[in-house]
Image (tube, rainbow, N blue to C red; front, top):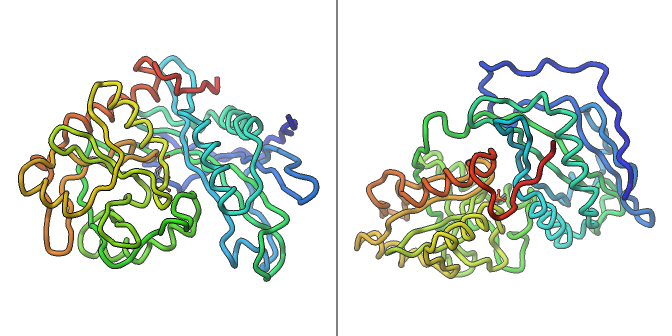
Length: 356
Ligand SMILES: *Cc1c(COP(=O)(O)O)cnc(C)c1O
């Protein structure tokens, strides 16, 4: 394995105090990881250096054709002073699946994991210790060839930055309202929907703004072909509990395979709940809501872990979920996943990795 060179900052920044709300994605720590790729040479010069601005030619390919991949995970502080990562192997595997789809060279898993651990260790003083806070980790790769032709780049930069984040929920789980989008689509099978890349997000902005204007916080996407089947929420996967069964859309090529999604499926199965990964039509949801069988709905993702859904809106219909409060499965998943992440609940699946 390549050796990571370490250069510590001479000018550490002030660490945010306990009163800082730590708004998501606004504060960055003292250090970052960098590694370069050159065709013929492979990935080289892994290093942890002071957090800095980067300089690129205006012609750098990432600016023009969007060849980039990103990931998102968190480091969690435990009460006994350890720091845990949650299933980082899944993020690394998914990063390389995304890379293959986007014609970005794969990143060796061993150096990726070592970079995550070393960087978090160096900036561990930035991990907040108020309940619910954590250190968000953003690995990403950009194409850097200075060239306006369309082809995969021959050079890339891989970086990891860290950002302390406040609690997603200030006071307990809070149900959200979700807008089912019937005209814009996010992704189609065969496209890049299952890769974690900026292009999927820019495709979603217009619908997100529209939903916000209507008073909805999130967009639920339908399949791009028939616009009939449920896909996901754009930064979260979606689950329903219909008549006692947990159902989530099957991975069909246009849905992002969330680590939290997989975690929810494994936990629900371990509790003896029936779980189905299959196609779910809007019509099925409409009928389940009408007959009182739509018992629960929640989104799953690294940021919120579990985001209970209070109601769904489709065109002029509103589908009420359960009693509009937080369902028992949503609550149990939230408590179990966050408990494992914080080292409070026994990690029977071996999901956590110690940074120290
Ligand atoms: C990251 C992401 C998710 C959630 O994935 P997790 O690994 O659970 O955080 C869901 N959908 C999209 C489009 C995403 O980018």
